[in-house]
Length: 236
Image (cartoon, one colour):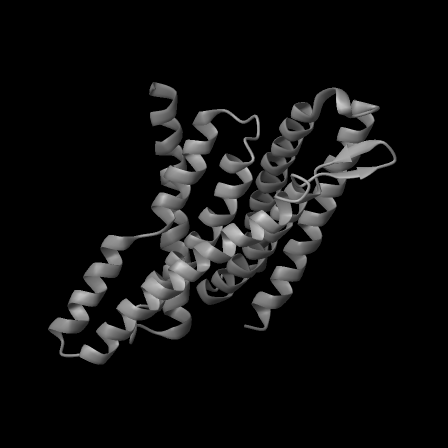
């Protein structure tokens, strides 16, 4: 129980920081005439929690409950915020902006529900038919997890590029930040893949060689999609 509490606290701290940076960057980009920042974190978090619920929970990957709690409850629970959405809406009503208040309620609820549905649906497309695993020359490769990691890397690239430019970070600090974030993401996503391949167990031939090859593929895919996300972020 204590381990789960610590995991949720750590995940929550990361999620809260991400929410702050994303919402601050979005407000700097689009202004504060509408709760764009709150809407952005809620939509992003809703899509990701749908996708990762399918990838982590419904697929029953052999990952400790502490890590699932850190990601699903701590990280995404802190990234999204119903209380700030409610406060923003109340302020709009109080200021007489009834149209914006109603639009905020409609868009936030509808778009977040669609985002959760999109995340779950995409996860089911990846994992349902073959459990996210492809047979290749007698070896089972977890392509579903590699694709999920690539999507995550792309989103990180988009968000970090936009926020770094809006914050006016110097190129050297931006490079350090991106190296640290991408390195951490590749490390943890590779660990996730190794756990999945351990779960596949005896079905894998040349386990060490295959695992190293898939981890290398995951790293290359993550960096490629992070770069693509960075390019997209520069043009947003």
